[in-house]
Image 1: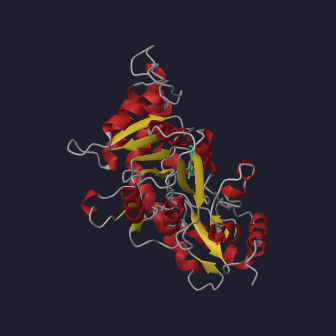
Image 2: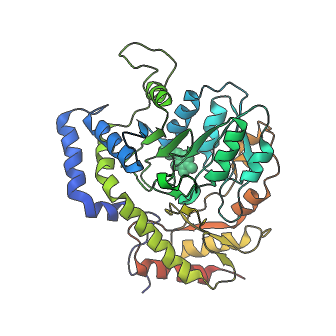
Image 3: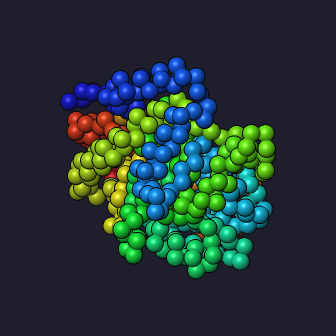
Length: 391
Ligand SMILES: *Cc1c(COP(=O)(O)O)cnc(C)c1O
């Protein structure tokens, strides 16, 4: 069984093999059309994605495509018209892009702790961090699972705050809002603006960079469209300062081919996650991913938590070394929280202690997770993990 099949952290080549004819045709069509920027492929994909997210004539969801997920976040905060010094509450246990754009716009990121089970932003920590300067909450739907949007939207409503959902890792995830269950509560459509990324390894990934904003607010949608196109809605008329951030036509065409497969892709990830769960179920040192009962997890990452709270990184690092030697890919998302990154320590931003975040960075390890992961793969990976864990 050893080395039976090559293992990958993500397997874009294997996925491509199943859809090669459609992808090749779609790319070729764009090449032949010559419409590389703002072409019909972008409009078609944008429309298809809106429908996929649940947009209807009665309740439209606007999709504004852009160049990447980081730009989507930046455009979102530009559109909200916040002022320098306005505070945005966000987790520290995330990818740098989330917090980076806040600081880039001279807003003040206030980083809060996450829930030790779901690793998403802790609503109680958010409540405690709200000040008169707070203007927005920026939850991250980490690893493919929604943050507690019921609690976060309630806080936002009570304090008059915007909510921007970083959905880069969770396209297709849902959250059961109770009162709103009929709406499906799709990740990225519950707050003021949702942002996502089409980076190749994301659940809906292109073959290059891409991103998008979602909103139900037509005025914000218009602002976002202008911001992503040099502050312009009419050629050579620039009403505001914007960016050059467009989804290119070839990426849109590829994403348009992949979108109808997305539910299937997410189902394949969930099935792989369940196989892993079963293989680790009885292990005293492994906590498998906790599904929040209200969230539909789409497993961008399958992340184990090792040992007990307060354990240092030694066990995780020894496992990482063992996996490297055994030829098993893995990832550590994230080895260092944002508030301890050099770019942020220099700023001396105020924040409450973040013990859960710091603990998780010592104990998490993510296993290969993609749409092509077979039963043989998960068996091979799980057995290597078991062997590499020191007690
Ligand atoms: C990938 C990612 C981003 C950034 O997306 P890019 O398309 O790479 O710019 C932002 N936030 C989170 C949580 C991500 O995982």
